[in-house]
Amino acid sequence: MAKTESTGSTWRYRWAHRQNVRRVSTYRGAEAAWRRRDDELRRLRVLAADFQGSAAAGAGLALELAADEVVLWALPAAQLVEVRHTTVLPAPDLTVAPQTGPLRPRRPDGVRVTDAGMAVITSRRLVLLGGRGRREWAYGRITGLAHDPAAPVTLIQALDRRLTSGLLLPTDAAPDFRFKLTLAFADAIEQRAAVLAQLDELIAEHAQLKPFRPAVNTPAQARFTARVPGGRRTLAVAAAIALLVPAALIESDPSDPTGGAEVAAAATPAPTQSAPPTHSAAPALIRPSPVRVTPPPKATRSPRPSPSASQGPRCGAPENPLGYDYCGGTRIRKPAAEVCDWFDCVPQFWSGRGYLVQCRDGSVSLTGGRPNACAEHGGVRRTVAK
Image (tube, rainbow, N blue to C red; front, side):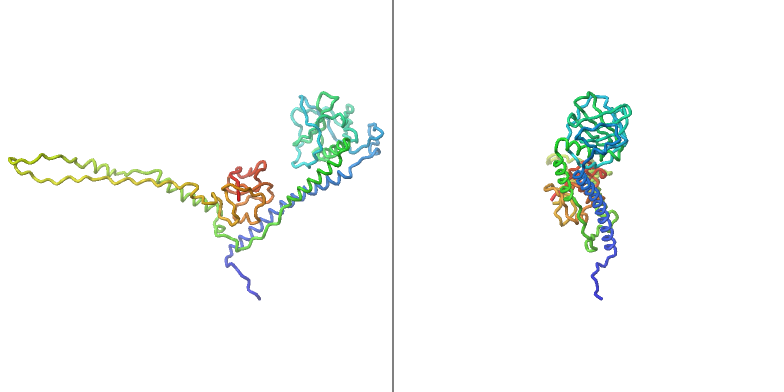
């Protein structure tokens, strides 16, 4: 049997196993999120291509259809809402991007419910068959339309009404209603092809964001810092303390409690100038010359180490063969697969969509340039560059 090469260190194998498990878990979470959005985009593409109605779908409804009008969609549970204050809505557009966040079952402030009934989308208008009567919005008379991003409310402005009104729908039916209303409006202005082209572009852009399977860590890649609890962060804190304690002691500069130099200088008598000798005077005793005690010079304070000197050429970044640093330069949008071997990556690192940044807690994230980047790690501290 061939003898396999070994590093001879059990902790290295444990380190490699932990790293591989973490990487695979992060990759699987990012890949599952990517696949869910891809499936939703492709479902909308098929629906947009096959979306059509029929006159028979309106059978049994208290609604008279025109000769060329067909029913496209109907929902029995809808509420008519009106806005108390005057507002200006944006013009209707053909945006069909799927809902990214969940809708909350609430009614926005300033919106009141006035009726309830069945919502019907036809090829020419949107109709609510309510208990108090019928309310309809013809596509050719709609001047403004807005979908609330947080609540299942769609507001509509029309030329023949002073108050802004709309529909409040169940949260699970609101995304489908919004998409089909957009398709019906696109058909009314003969722009179905524009909706299909937009969905094709969204699918192509999303395909480029598919996460890559991470490389496998080997025991030989383990560094000695992996044996220290906390890893590089613990060593960095210890090094910072080792630098700050001497600097704090020098800054305090305690004086000598005995005051030896000052006392010696004060006790030394000042030298007196003797009178010149005369022949009649008795010979004077020879006195020893007083010795002046010179106080020793005070110790000069050592200058504090500058941050740039301690940070080195990487401006504080850990040593790595990738050439990544904090000194500024080209932003990194597609980091190397082994970036987490040299930097402390945040959880779900590979699901980020942006450039590489360092958070305030020392970890690195791939959410630079995105809203709420490093939101769970104290915010963005600086950009990782190359």
